[in-house]
Length: 271
Image 1 (spheres, helix red, strand yellow):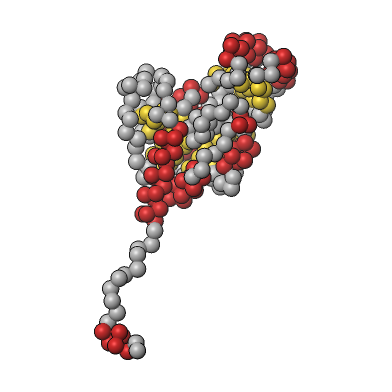
Image 2 (image 1 turned 180 degrees about the vertical axis):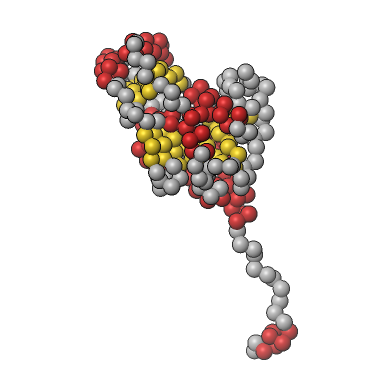
C-alpha cells in the first residue's frame, strides 16, 4: 500500500477527454470543526464552472455530505453528484437515484443520547445514514464507535463507516467506488478517463475503481492509501484546479482580432 513518500507528487493534466470526480471536505475545502462550519473558498466555484464547461459536464462531486449540503456549499452550481457516499446520485442530466432507505431509528436514538450527554459530539442525520462527529472530542472516539456499532448487531443490511473523526451507520454495499462506476456508465462521463481526488479512508473505494479503470487517483494530504498520486493539501488541489481552469479558458477563447492595417485604398478614403 503506497504511502506519502512512494506516491508521485506530479499531478496529472486534466484533458478534454477526462472525467473529473472530487470529494468536498478535506479536498475542495479545508476540514472544519463541525459540518456546518465548512465553506467554499473564493475562486473554487469559478474553477469548477470553467472545468465543467470544458469537460462537457463530466465533473461530479463525490462526498459523504447530503445533497442539500452540497448544493448549499456549491451554489449556484448544481453539478452531477454522488452524495452520502453514493446513496444519493444526481446524474448530469438531473436524473436522481436513491438507495433504499434503511431503518435507522436505533442509531438515531443512541446517537442523540450520546450527543446530548457530550455536547462536543455532533450528531448528523442524513437521508440515508446517521453519523457522529467527534473532532471536538477525540477522546470520545471509541465511545462513538461502540455506541453506533451496538445498534447494527444482527442487522446485516447495515454497516459502520469510519472516516476522519467520524463514524457513520449506513446501508451496506454502498461506497464511492460504486457511485463513480454508476456515473461513469452515463453521459457525459462514459468513455472518458476518470480522475478522482479525495482525502479520507472513505475515498479508497473510489481510488480503487478509477485506477482499475485506467484512471488517476489523487490522495490529498498525508495517510496510507492505494492512490498513486499525492497532493499535499486542499489549497494545493485548488491551485491545480485553478491552473487547469485557466488553461481551459485560454484554449476556449476566440482568436484575438487581427492587427493587420487596412488596405491603403481604404485608409486613404477615410478623411
